[in-house]
Image 1: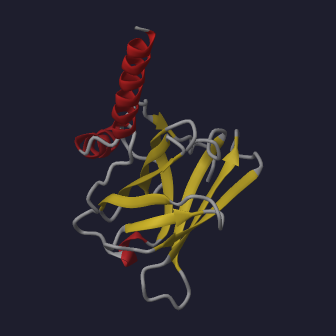
Image 2 (image 1 turned 180 degrees about the horizontal axis):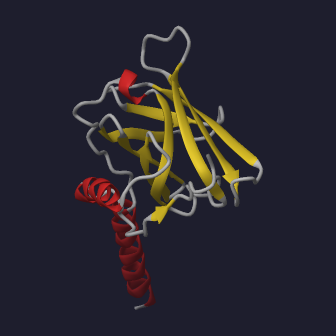
Length: 192
C-alpha cells in the first residue's frame, strides 16, 4: 500500500513539474514586421517595464534608465552592443552600467544577449518598432527558473498614457507576461 501511495505521489509531482516548466518557458514572439537594425540603433529611454525578480536584480534600484544599441565595429552579421545604464535610486545617484552583447541575430531583430562569457544568454527580441517607440522582450530559462522582461522604450524620456497603453496592449496581445506581473513606470523625471 505504501509503495502504491509513493508511486502516485511521484507521478503527480512529476506531471506537475512538466506543467510548471511549460507555463514558465520563454515565449517566442515574432520580431516587429518593420524591424531594421539601422532603425533600432541609437539611444532609447526606458519608460516602463514588466519584469521578474531575477531579471530585475540589476535594475531594482534604477532610475533614469537608458539603452544605447550600437553595431559592433566591422560586423556584418547584425552583432551589436547594448549599453544599459541607469542611476541608483535618484537622478544624482551612482551611475550603473551593464553592457550586453547581442549575437547570433536570426532573424533580424532577434539575438542572444550575453553579459558574461560563461553566463547563460537571454533571448532578446524587438517585438515592436516605429520611429519613436520600441518594445523589447528578453527572457532566459536556467535551472527551472525563467526570468523575463518587457521593456517599453522611447526616443524621448517620457510618453503619454495613451501611448503607454497602446504599447502594453501590443505586449499583452502576445501573452508575454506569463506570470501576470505588474507594469512599472521607469522614473525619468529630473534625469535630463
